[in-house]
Amino acid sequence: MTRIAVYPGTFDPITNGHLDVIFRASKLFDKVIVAVSTHPKKSPLFTVQERVELITEVIKNHENVCVESFSGLLVDYAKSIDACAIVRGLRAVSDFEYETQMALVNRKISSEIVTLFLVPNEKYTYLNSTIVKEVASLGGDVSNFLPEFVHSQLKKKLK
Image (cartoon, rainbow, N blue to C red):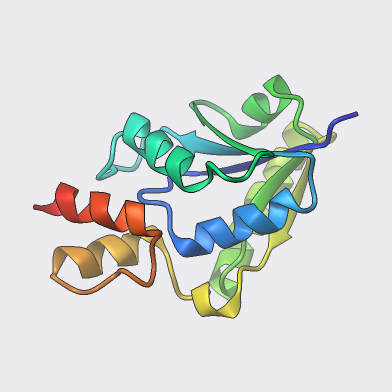
């Protein structure tokens, strides 16, 4: 049986912290699907298709990782791809409360899918896409926070 994990998020844009979690998960599961969300309450800088393309480019050398977009309930999507786990990254204590709440709701909806929390390398614990976009939009250097390809696309998008 193939063990499939789904790592959901908006990834607007994908950061080195996200990649750290993806690559850690890829060592634990046979297949990791990075699931780009079409979150109705967010106004992303990059379109869903652009985000899928950015992620596809930066994970291309990892055979057991792929990218898809989804909408609707995460647990419904996870079931539709036969995932056994949802992977979530925890950066700080503030993430823990929200992520635990979501994990418990997901378990109520679908008890057969577990949520696995992974802590990224400590050098990424302060990092998120919102901060990266804000710093970049104000002219700050975010090259250490993003894969080179994503950084170049972000600079183009902000011009």
